[in-house]
Length: 119
Image (cartoon, rainbow, N blue to C red; front, side):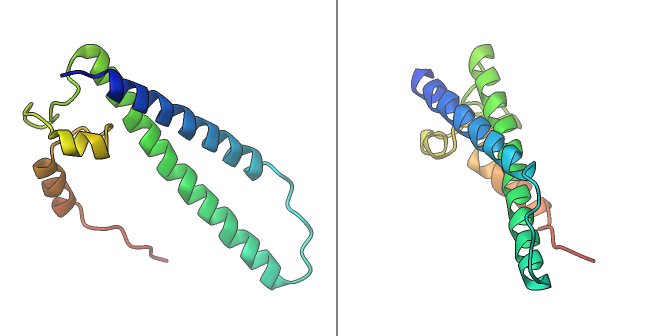
């Protein structure tokens, strides 16, 4: 399998994620601005929570991107980590950092119940 195009895309995605996470970290360290009422404070809290959620998702994706780059280096890129079978080209074009074929991704999603917030 030719991996040059995938490697370029993965490196670009890695850079994009690192840059975005860096900006998010800078914003998170900004001092809290003075707010005039509880409503403004609540909006700020929601905005910060959303930023942290995006940063968490970016961190997970960055790990997956770096794992895919390692698979390119060790020659296992494009192979499902569950059974070693091929990952379809269409899936790799859509998600080049995916570690599994579509079948095993569906099975994993079915076995992991969705997380719901609780108090």
